[in-house]
Image (cartoon, rainbow, N blue to C red; front, top):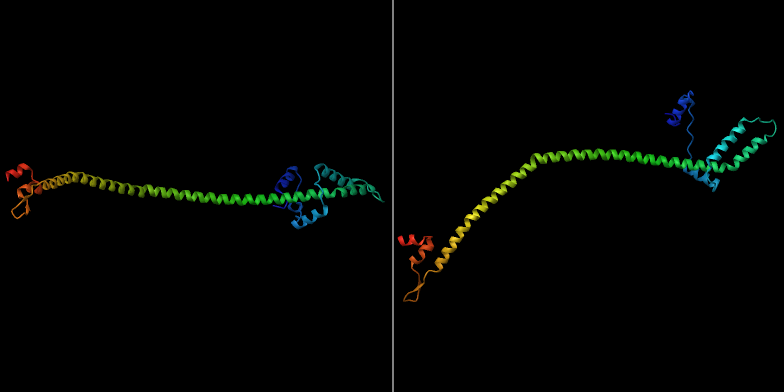
Length: 218
């Protein structure tokens, strides 16, 4: 695409004016930041030209070009040139502001292009992370969760076995405590040598876990 904008080219094409790449308007040389600073210093505190003034400039340029030029002094052109010269600083200020705006817009466009590219990269990365998360979730549902459920069930079964054993052990503990209590209640005798003793019959039943009827029968 030539240096002129596509919008301008489309407008010329719609007007029916033939145009080739050779007839395209050349791209104006952009002022450098140093040149803009130097020019701004030269024109001083001039305000940018208004649209009305720019239109008047165009009319003055046209009048200089199209009026009948005398052979001697052309006071009409001199007057127009003097009028434009007095107001040239305003036009130059508008030019500087326009170039500064273009540069700023170009930086913004570059920023947003970079941001869009990064957003695309971030979106692609987010999609990859989403796919990885889905795969991890699928693996978790297929393998990890069933294994955890089996482990939990195994521990639950183990807890139940220990609970059953504990429930069975409690009566046994109570019976042993009772036997020890009965042994402690056995009568202690003292012989002529002042030695203490108990009869086997008195501790046999609690010692061997026999009930009273079984002890009597023996």
